[in-house]
Image: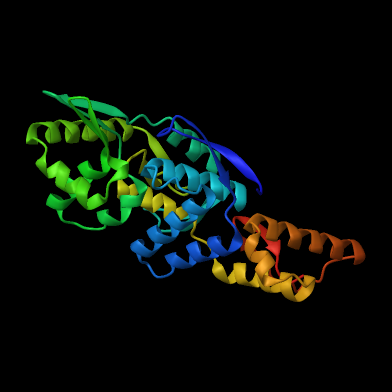
Length: 306
């Protein structure tokens, strides 16, 4: 079965059991950011979600719950701390700030977004955009986005005791159904979605002050907005692949690990093996060579040259 851990998702109001991210999937996800292609990153991040909780995308996982899963997966599989590079807006000096990932989880886990809207004999249960639909929102066409927002946020429609579950039909079919609903009910749903976003935006998801000016260098509100959540997802997996490849190379060349075995391990386990190797070297030598370079991986400083 392998190691699993529990995560509470507000969209499900229950615990789900998740697996770790293995090193290969982590490496591919980080690599997808190097192309500056949001569609590629969304594809890879959804693949990772399906690996750690199989089937959850088709069950109707929303974009907030997706971020919660990825926050927890990174904390468990890589490092519980996230180092963010920021720039002071007044002095233009760069600085690094460490964020405890559990603070992001705590803020996201309190989000409330489930609603029911009624109109005549129609009852619509709706929440927020679903993760499997995220790719459709990479457009600036406001008219299309209006339909997409409704098609992805609606969970089910009840008309005269007949229930239509939206997670059981394709995105294209959902869009057609939305376009055939009365304009009044669509407008009421959009109004509730807007009010939810407005209420959430009064709180901060990520807030980092510059140490030079005390002016906010990073100010990201709590949100259900696709663009904001996608940006935070990318921050989670912005890493230096050169150091990652160097770590893998050292484990293969100096400790004789097999590459396919390392691919199956969590990145944190790779770091642990290398740390044990360095400790063993320190015990067998009176002092470490002073010419070693220090690299970084997942927010931790360690020697990659042994």
